[in-house]
Length: 385
Image (tube, rainbow, N blue to C red):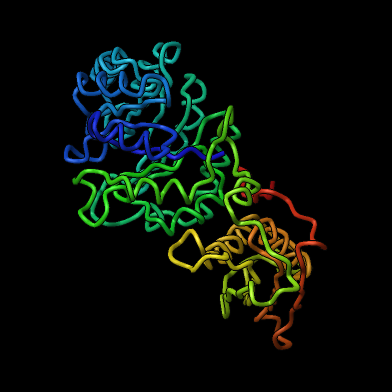
């Protein structure tokens, strides 16, 4: 499952996030920088309010990578009773020495390192985090200027980050100006955490107070944990339990079609040696038949995102060479049919640079006939997993 992390600035906001179903209550001051620290006394008050009902985390502030400074801040914040401590991996200083200095704390509190997608993050440090018994790593944005995480890293690169964390035994988290339409896209990657602040504050921006309605909307778009659940993957069966179970395909009045057309992506595909050596442009056309909700379509909870279609194709293209267009089309179909609203798909895959015209295949698959695998993941090397 993927946890919903809500960043709050005080006990009052913690109460709103808790009531709204957030899975992790994260103390952060949005007015004090990317990882602005909340005063320890306020964190202690908030942790007491949560009283173990949810994990609680707190950031250490926008501190340089100086071992003694970080260790002192971590010791102070750990004494507030939080479950997780988040520290930023900022440019400059000695990151390796700072991480080593924090390692002894890992026996008392879970440590999470935050990398910044807009600051050329050194993700080679992930292995060092695992060596020093850190609990996890997150990608966020340092600049809070309206740019989102997906403006700095594409879906395939984010998938490789999540997969590498998984390989190393680290929890993975994604945050950074995330908007509601980003949620179904990032759930494809099955991170352990999705973190939010701006999306919880309505139209007033991240420096304003969080709103119960906005918390509820984010909660509705992320499958709930359920009793005794743990992070580590999206269980789309929970989506079905939340009202997304498909209706009978024989009733056309209850289905809609979502289209993606003329989507062109360079990728390595083909059986010839030269086709393994360099990418070629491939064009996709996809129609997804979905079960329409019985209620009037009102917001993102009621639709199937076309971004899920294009991101699925992007991840498959990033996974490495594919020999046959038939194989690629079948993989796309299986991934899309894994989503409970999807009843049927029609997929056209065309190679545009063969020298003998445009060649390809069109397939049609239904849920009943599909061999479905959940969810799609990429390995650390980009290979399909």
